[in-house]
Image (cartoon, rainbow, N blue to C red; front, side, top):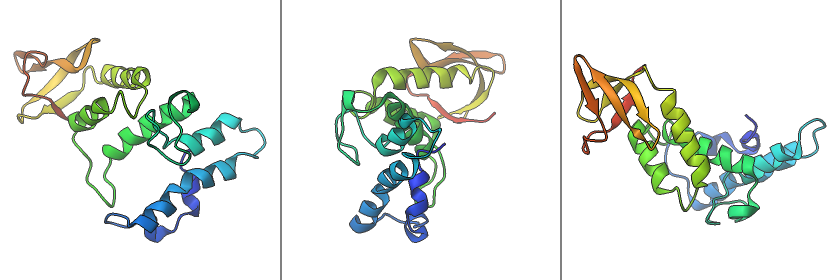
Length: 184
């Protein structure tokens, strides 16, 4: 909950800008991680890992993140977890600068980044746990059909077994279809 506390020191004109940030605005936005660390590091009762998570939640496994350009083993475990959750949330939420992406596109993009930006073990755990919470939920597929998830394959968590009326659809066999959206 505190990873973005440093955004309290970023101008509303940047935080609420509907378009792409220019280079100077982006540099200012990136400072929120440092601001968050500075705000949290000396608060009594808050473990140091919380401040480190605020500082490192935009670092990436391949060293291409910010604020310090850390990679792999130099990033705190909590920051790796928060980084994945933060990106997943950002991509799947409506923001002033973009519309929410469909569920399958969020997961596809994160899977593409699995061995570069994100820790693969943590990402697979997130996907597996996320999908297991969807058993019994109604979803819309990319072909416009609706169904209820009845089973998740632990080896292919995105390729669920669905019930649509009287038909059972195994998404492992339907290469063109994906879960577009979770209905409820």
